[in-house]
Length: 426
Image (cartoon, rainbow, N blue to C red; front, side):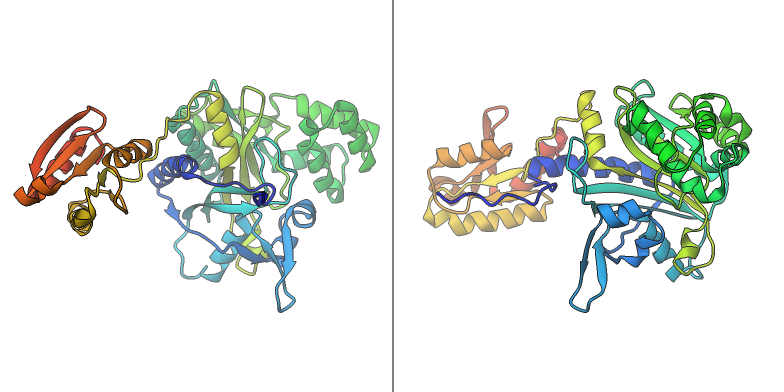
């Protein structure tokens, strides 16, 4: 027996029920994004490697990206994230665009990571950014968008939180500890990995980067101070906006949130599941990204949320809707060979009436066709035998209520449209 070829490791097959979930998330994302005045955009799935090499950090480029050479010898990568692409697109038309820009996208990304629960190598991701606004209030808007999404899908502040910090605040505190600027990125990685390592491993990692025992002790004190945020004007102003918007129950200060990507320069934030601390998304403020790809310096703030983890979190709280995709509203059966062409003509008339219509594509026993309609979730089945065709009639069978009614052929479209409207199907 031949073995079935398996999909590439870390990828997913999207059967219709899986697509229904993906489209459900997309619908919520679109609704929330547009409610704040954001426009949809998209970039290419392939990018030049040098777009990321100087902007996303060595780990993302050298360990997590799918990199290959094209036939011309140029190094390309399947996009591992979208912010550098966004910056490039903005730089290309910077003189033509009206700032601040509010853009969002939902599309596929690839990272060569070890597949595990909540993490795949191919995933879909919501990216949303405010470009050209250099204020804590702009940063607060993105956090508010995330809170609005959580409310929209039923995740209250008792289930999720958004932990926020400021890189500028942490830089000032590291300077006060005598940690030189050239060690800053390394120390940020130390902070970012605290929850990923055991206490002893974390300390060993910090000391291996050149921190003294005294500096490490000072770093631990910083991370344990719940009022450190009050030293940051940016955080004070952002939290004030969040409170006025009514989302203060969602948002908390957390000095351990620093984000791993090197282009973040100001407020950073991360959404977490309160039951287990799973990270749902991350984002933050950046100052230099557009300038780094050839445009004029332009600040921005954004976040990215993958579809895998948010689906897991929603499922853990029983918040995933019951999604039963129906390919059609109506199935036109084929009574016999003579009825085949008339069935297709009837289906065309019904589509003109705005209905989703499938035709059984061959002659078969009526019972088999009815079972097929039931399995795919079609509610209404049309039957036209010789007597009905001769009289210009069609029998409409309601599989849910187990009822049927004979209708004039030229009135069946309106009859079905009215019936579906009554049950909320159209």
